[in-house]
Amino acid sequence: MTRLPYALALSLLASPALAGPPIEQPAPAPAPVAASGGATIYDCQIAGRTERFVIAGGALAEGPGTLSVLTEDVYVVTRGGVTYLIDPTGVQIDQGVDAGKWPCVESTAAPAPIPAVPDANQMARIVELEAEVANLQAALSAANGERDAAIAAREAALAASVEAEASSAAASTAAQTALNEAAALQTRAETAETAATTAIAAQAAAEARVAELEAAAAASAVQMAEVQTSLDQTLATLATANARVAELEAAATADAAEMAHMRTLQGQMAETLAAAEARVAELELALAASMAAPEEDMAEDSADDAGAMADDAEEAAEDMADGSDEATEEMSDDAGSDDMTENNGAMEDAAFDADAALLAIEAADLSPISRAALTAAVEQARNNPDFVAEVVTRLQNALGE
Image (cartoon, rainbow, N blue to C red; front, top):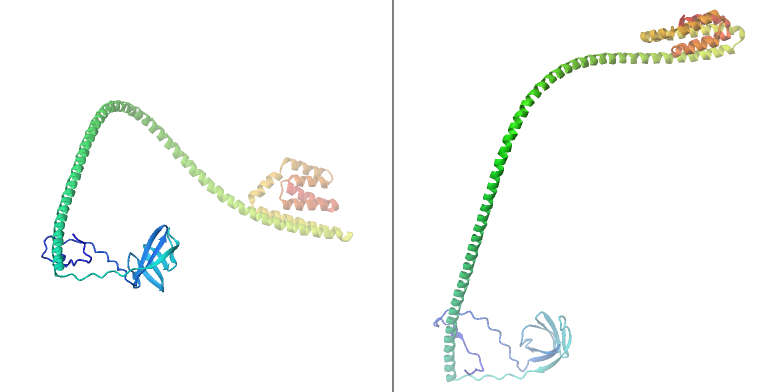
């Protein structure tokens, strides 16, 4: 077939009169714009290879990419994600392995020849060729259909083969599962037999244990009877103990009430003692003042002060006796001891000894107020013999005969 210098009109390929199914043809690549007399060609040496840029009418005439005109004879071409800045001196690449400045040679393409208009014979031949092309396309379409059918058959066979393999694998798996189940059943049977043997032995042991437990239960019944007897005795003892606890609690309650009363009496005695001590201090001050007075007034004032001191001491003693009868009785009992009686007898038989009287007062079980009052009276009697008889009488009353 002779190559024609012009493109054939293939409009007949889309006619419904042609046999065979329609064939999806890829979109034809855009025909390159023929370089005319106004086209500019840049042959650039980039990394040892020649790359051509054909620019005509403000666009790329050949090859992929987009063109932008910056100024006259200065272009920007974007191709494959790489930007080329082209001018008459060379090309500048901004990125990639070819980044850098590369030299270019500018040339002008010769005008392409204009094809002659075909005559009638050529047109008839073109029609014949178009018919042949259409028949070839139909045959190609049929061949493609047969090929597609063969591919589908092959794919179905492959699917059947895969399914058969899957079935075989499933059968093999099922057989293996059955074998595993049979082995498991065998193991379970052996385990059941072992368990049965163990159960028989356990039953025999259980029967022996039951006999032991029955004997132990009989012995336990005897022990329970003994324990019950002991428990009854313990309960009786516990009842007695509870009664005793109740008595002790009642006694403790009475003791608590008595202790509270004693605390009240102690408080009263403490108050009385404080008042008596204050009075004694006043009397001591008065005694000191009287001792500083003239001698003719000293005897009378001392007698008055001693009488007042004695009266105050006796009043304090009476107050304490009224506040606590029991305390007074105990002091009276203690004061009536044999040693004190002997000391008092000695004072009556011999001359008045103030130091011996003070020792007897210190040894006696007296309240602080009584002891202070008697001590002051003895000191007065030491300094004034006129008070000896009265002081001895007070000592006998306080210490007992």
